[in-house]
Amino acid sequence: MNSSLEVDVVIVGGGPGGLSAAKILAERGARVLILEANAEIGSPTRTTGGTFIRDAVELDIPPQLYHPLKRGRMHSAHRVVAREYDPPFACILNVRAVFQFLAERAIDAGAILRMSTTATDVLIENGMVAGVHAKDVRGDELLIRARLTIDATGYRATLSKRAGIHAGFNRFGVGAEYDMYAPHYEESETVGIVGSAFAPAGYAWTAPYGNHRVRVGVGIIHGDSKENPRDYLDKFVENAHAFNINLRGAQPLEYHYGLIPSDGLAKKFVGSGILAVGDAAGQPSALLGEGIRWAMRGGMMAGQIAAEALNANDVSENFLARYEQQWRKQYGKNLRIAALINKRIAGWNDAQWDEGIELLDHLTAQQFGEAMASNFVSSWTLLALAGNPKLLRKSLGLVKETLRAK
Ligand SMILES: Cc1cc2nc3c(=O)[nH]c(=O)nc-3n(C[C@H](O)[C@H](O)[C@H](O)COP(=O)(O)OP(=O)(O)OC[C@H]3O[C@@H](n4cnc5c(N)ncnc54)[C@H](O)[C@@H]3O)c2cc1C
Image (cartoon, rainbow, N blue to C red):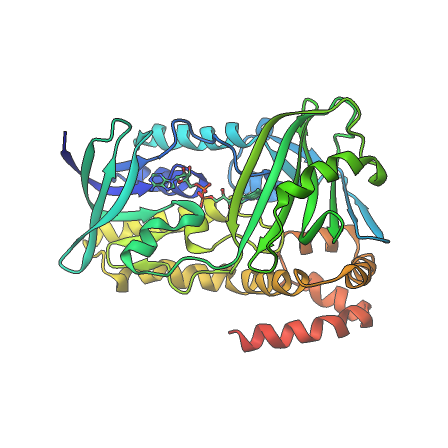
């Protein structure tokens, strides 16, 4: 059976980007409908949930939904760097609980959430996006007319591609991960492993999120390598003890697999009647393959401008471009540097990684944390470079590339 409905804004995708946009828009009085293809918010999980405590606080994520980390350690083939944090700097989210919390906030604000419903195409009228075609769980067709459409479909960027805003992504971080019950794992520490043995063109990680649960994964950049991270995951688990990672008695309870775009920002992320947020806009930081806080910020910023566009009765590309300009101004430089670093280190061999880890060992705990958080355009960077001539020499090429890529 075919049916149709009309709203102010249809948001396609119930991830952190879409749910954050929904809350802002509904709070500002818009009639908001969120479509989510899956039958459950935050499941199946495709993300490790690593983020930074100051962002979690700014984004109002309740502290009981994340696990603080006091120590970070990174290994290459022959080197290691470790830093202690008191108070903790990074954390691991209870991903499903956080995404469901975001859904609850959007619902409280007045948004309607429709699960098991997949947008199949954009509706184009008079040269602009005027809603979406969708299918529900029974396969029934739905036509949803909306003054504004938000593409929050994640790495697929389905609607952006259909609307011709951008062509999608070429380079992806592909991750395979076990969510393990690990009774003896040291829960205050996260560990990263780089190098050809466990993660060619990527890295392996352990990410504890409390109650003896640890996400253990391998991510590889496809585009730079054809290796399958799954092939390295069991090898990493078997050899974890070599890195002082205690997985004695540990067993996987869940297996996760997912993609994250690693090209950097999409060339364009608005069109007439449509905005893209989060992974669909290429907003994650490619440095670590980390996009939850960025998707939330993207959703909030897009939601704010979208609400202004509805009030002004102007959903033209020209009006919506304010969102893209604001995003590029606020985050563009850091994200560009993150993408450039990621592209460069994805090609490193083991000797280059050893040298890279040695350079990182010149950073203080705070500087190391800021670098991991992709916060490059900041006073700490200048201080760190001024104090480390070798680091400065190594970074100059990157500075030139960043300026050229402007
Ligand atoms: C292995 C792995 C590990 C990661 N680890 C981290 C990490 O530690 N920290 C971090 O911050 N980020 C991490 N990320 C990235 C992070 O998960 C994403 O950047 C973030 O989830 C992006 O949010 P989003 O809302 O843009 O998209 P998503 O979270 O991907 O949400 C998109 C939603 O849209 C739905 N959808 C898609 N198409 C349709 C459609 N046509 N109709 C209806 N619904 C649709 C999907 O089902 C999904 O629920 C990781 C990613 C991977 C793959």
